[in-house]
Image 1: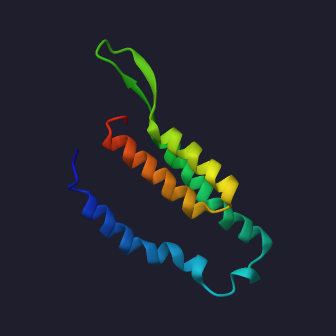
Image 2 (image 1 turned 30 degrees about the horizontal axis):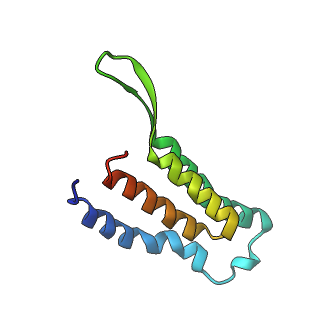
Length: 110
């Protein structure tokens, strides 16, 4: 397992988090129009769905036969959706999804 890009990913998270969180932390969020507020609530699930779709791939084996590969990411997304529906907490669900995906990759399942 390689850890050479973990520090870079952490650095990029620190650099990009303020710009991504600023709209959510700005005062007056409750004064936004209802359509904008609904849109902001759907950004997280949309991003999660895009991540799941990007990690599904059609791969070829040695004989060049195509096959659909569904990795550990789909299990992580399903767990995230279950936690979000149960606890109404997207952050907790995303943390669980990241932990499952990282754990699966560390064990060689993905």
